[in-house]
Image (cartoon, rainbow, N blue to C red; front, side, top):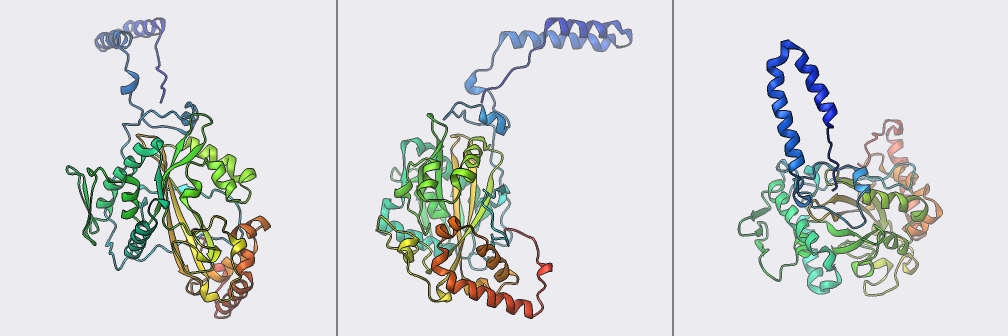
Length: 416
């Protein structure tokens, strides 16, 4: 980052010192002060801090905006805060966090919130299921699920190294990392990953450690847009990295027909990516209705091998037991050394019939879905499940209300 040095003119310095010397009661204080002032002035004139070693310090969104496109000066002064161990974390006992990221009225916004550094990566008792499913898919589909361009090799390694500083401290019963040998061990499975191995792929190794999918976005020099330059996407459900790889942010969203992206989300999102600082990570949540029980790829929209799939190729849902609530928790942070933006996507997956046992959920979800605009309906497959889901939500909501549930007492605790 460029910084602007503050200089003090000779006239101002002399006048200030003369005023002090005029006060006889402080003359003993003024003499050493003058000496220090002269020394400081000569030092500033005689030496300049080299650009490459100048400390960056805390960044601000406005400073980020002033950078040339694609330019990043490594921030060597920032250190990601170390988290405390997750209290009583258990591979079998720690339940998934119950994200219920919907309101009575649906609005299209980025929906970002400040992220607590300690909760960057969330693991729970579904870790083994996610891990095994990732390993199976990577073994069968290989590099259809991951890729890294030359632009993002350094960022991919930086992301992995950040994980290795975080995970063994946050989840010490699951991971052990020998920093000197650069070897990470998953204690529950006895898998060992040696970072010195020339075959070690940093983005794939990172994906095997956590329940999230990972995407690394890099700023381009030509227009300041961010493009997807590295990622391991194994459990996305509805999209494939090979279709989006090296696309810029706008193209990623417009190619997927994201509602109101051009008018509402796009300008704000590009500005946000440009101004994101290393000190200010964020999270956001979203949700979908899925008409099959496949966490990895939603088979109801078509085969993963087909080029053209979507809700237009999906059959109508006929059984509420085949409907699932799919919610994503997405974290975004800027990596300090490379300046890339690291994007993690953790998917939470629960049967709709289980979800609707929770107080207030059926009415709130019903109101949220029926407030979608027409373009949102098309994007989220509303017409494929509405005839099954809406009556079910109404029935469950009325049952709760008949049993005495007071809708006016509903806690306002989004996104839970």
